[in-house]
Image 1 (tube, rainbow, N blue to C red):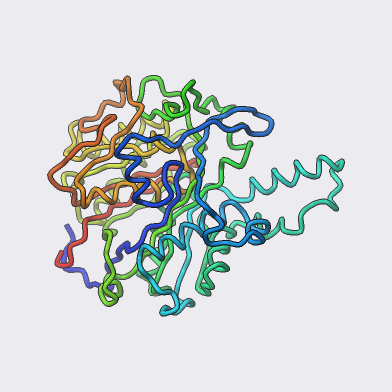
Image 2 (spheres, rainbow, N blue to C red):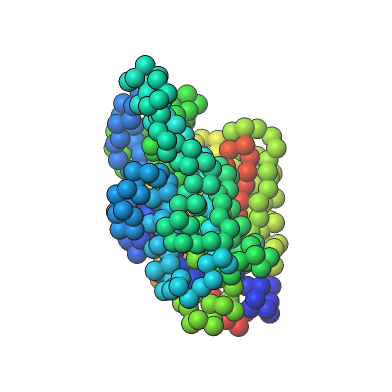
Length: 418
């Protein structure tokens, strides 16, 4: 493992802000993951009727005024809530920071779909007369909207943008924040991912047309990665933003350090629009390990991407087995079994849900795993109940997306002298 890096080149997480279908802060989220509480419910959506979805229940008025909500977007509100919560968790006083040296980097799956669908639905009632089209439409649908709304809310004047990275977006937002700190472009980064996907009938219809939209009589049992009876994706919304700092800066202000980011990788399959490529996933995991100076035996927890699709789950299990062996030391879990697929927020939320393992030495389980698919049978897959372990030093987080974009992040329990 890499050691003796200068503190200026070590990037740490000092704050976490999130909203998930089963929790509006890390403590609530973690409690739900340890007690088996799902966040999936029924949702009636236009043109489709009843579907199953993961909906968040945070209070947007905690950090915004009603006029802000009327003008802005759901994704913007999620991002603002998460950013404000992350700053509070990090015990940061932004007034003491140079806001021109603060950056906002958010991964997304898509943006603007919800607002465009809503506007078309509204003008349909007026025989498609465009004079009824909202004058707020353009700032709502531009791709940088969620990150831009954060800067407006917090008065941040440094760089902001979103990174369109499909369902790898949450990891990639985090990676980009790290890179911008290393490049000395900023001194503080708000980085992660957001998703408002449940507001779009199109994403539900798209998965349904592919035969990949999950259904189950009990909504809380619908998201079932690696289970022999899995039948697709549960679409969810959510967000998670991390405060990232150089270790030297965090130590200087006496910050509580959640963990250190020690490895990461991004690559592309270049093979198919939807179906994943095992070899490229293997390559991505190995690249992250190599960058961290680690061997597979060093990893204590692997949080899987597994979405509940037959092909996707199988390919990821094959990739994990190829890198870590059929009987890996690491304990393996899955967070989507609780919250569904939060798209652009997924990678960040799933990493966050595992961070408390550094302190409590508990590995949260994969729930709804009643009949393990023999083809997904990995050793140390934590099923239905939390697992107590002796120690957790390293967590590896997989996050893969459509059009073959792959991302892996590795974090370690913080030790100053390492």
